[in-house]
Image 1 (cartoon, rainbow, N blue to C red):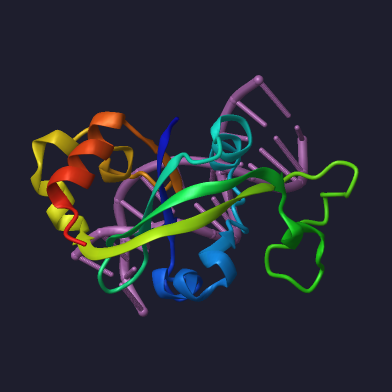
Image 2: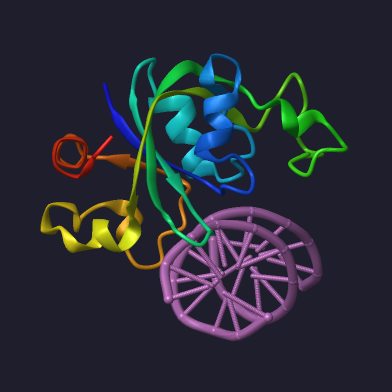
Length: 154
DNA sequence: GCCAACGTTGGC
DNA sequence: GCCAACGTTGGC
């Protein structure tokens, strides 16, 4: 069992969008970074814990708890020429990009980025490091526990 | 909308 | 396989 922080732009898929999806589940499509892809493809398991993070928006921060509900499978958007995530180098036989499914566990009161930065327990968090741009990063169990026990207020 | 940081591309 | 140019990310 592992823990992850996964960023989404609310203008793309917000926590409220997720809550309205069938089964409150979304395919984590559009990841076009090999490191992030590898996390999904090689390391994620069913029921891994996910912090749903809003990025590139007015109030960046953790906005929900979710979980991995399907193992990685080829990202459908790579095959669709009309999709902005289309990848001409990907084929059905040799897909390049994969995604897991993520299911909402619960929405929470937003934990803002600057709040996360205040806690010494979280200073090692990958997302908080200068220059980090990875949209999917592992969370240490101690970080997960600190956030869920100390910072989450339903 | 700016821009620093980082990843990818492609010519050589 | 180097590296300059370019594109993207994401906080501010």
